[in-house]
Every structure is written in structure tokens, then in C-alpha cells.
Length: 76
Image (cartoon, rainbow, N blue to C red):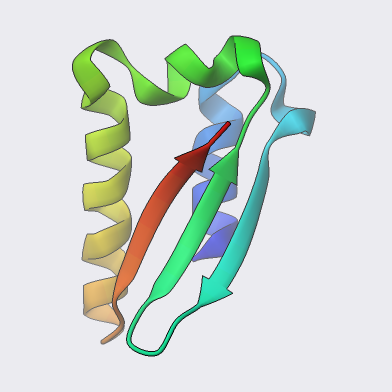
């Protein structure tokens, strides 16, 4: 999961080397914290948050197929 999110984010931004994903295990779900360079934040979020919503939906779909719960937080 972490690798998929990293791959998606690196292909969206201008500075792919600045992308980092931290995995936090909670009791009932996994939280993936996505960090990108400050100037790339808009590219990951998109207009009115559309790209961020689609990233979250895609990750939830993949996790659901594996029987897991996941959420994506975009951290600055």
C-alpha cells in the first residue's frame, strides 16, 4: 500500500525525491501520511481537493480488496 501511494504521488509532483509516506498502524485501520515538497502541495490536492479525493478513493478500494481499512492524510 505504501509503495502504491508513493508511486502515485511521485508521478504527480515536480520533486519526486521529496515524497515520503509514513505508515501508522491503529487498532482498526492503517493511516498513510503523505508528505511532499511545499511547492508540490497543490498538485497533490488539486482544485477543490479533487485529486486528493481520488487518491483516497483509490487507496480505499485497493485496501478493501485486501480486507483492510486505510486512510490517507496529506501532511505539510
